[in-house]
Image 1 (tube, rainbow, N blue to C red):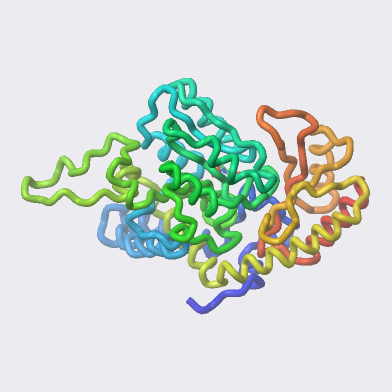
Image 2 (tube, protein in one colour):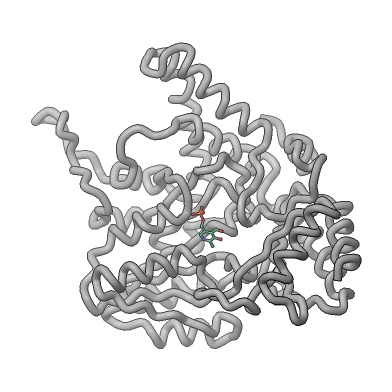
Length: 394
Ligand SMILES: Cc1ncc(COP(=O)(O)O)c(C=O)c1O
């Protein structure tokens, strides 16, 4: 595949001719190329017969390429990756792979996604696991606080790479080093980072990672993945899957466990995996450094503009390296109802799609912000329209 540009990516997304779409942090649009890959695979399977040689051929090679492409992008071994339907389900599988005992501890931060909080409530109810929530993610004490709370009952730390509510980039590599010093494994939630910037899991040195295909990767809806580091695989058993298939012959060797063999059960949608592979191929072809640079350029333009709007205050850290394409903005005196109305007017009157975001769990009507996700396929005119729209509506 020849190298692609962000302009070509924009052309491949017909939605960009209709609206300024700043909701990629929730759902990224799948491009025409991705849809075509999904459609072709499903059509060939259906028309030729999914279990015929021709039907199988429609996906086998492309699916293998998808899995190895994703592994290459994340710099992990293919054996360490499994396909899931989304980040939340992948996270549940990782949590189920841990032999929780009453009194064990699960460490998270106040900036985690609501699905992580949901998981923590259930771990508490089912096993009596205590969740330790680190609050001061905002200052230089974070790593010290993390080291302080770890003890011999801590079984897992879960950290977002980029925080969903405010776009903060967490020091996950440094946190993993602190955790490993204490002998505690780390799970990274990559939902908001992969697809925005290069992410090298070998370099971050985490034990587990989970992410979505349908956000910044611009893959098909209902795709996700999970990474289980090779060193964690022997004891990782989230499901009732034997090491040897019941169909294996007595002389067949027992295969080494892989993330796929321990997590993927039964039939799944081949076409979606092929589509995810196509999305990854596009990212790789443009270059994640180029995606990141374009996002940074547009985000700077957006933040400079917002700084001139009287009632608006950016709550995302703006120093270099502390955030990426997400910018969350609070409006003086705004409740959730006011914000919902503003978001609706931005959509109706200015063809600009942004998010009304809760900042706390449980929700507090005044702890809300407009979350603006700037993707590489956005352009200057859309950013300017967003700024003009805010100026007019406030
Ligand atoms: C950091 C983070 N984790 C998890 C999720 C949940 O993702 P999914 O819907 O793919 O499960 C989100 C969604 O916004 C997120 O931002």
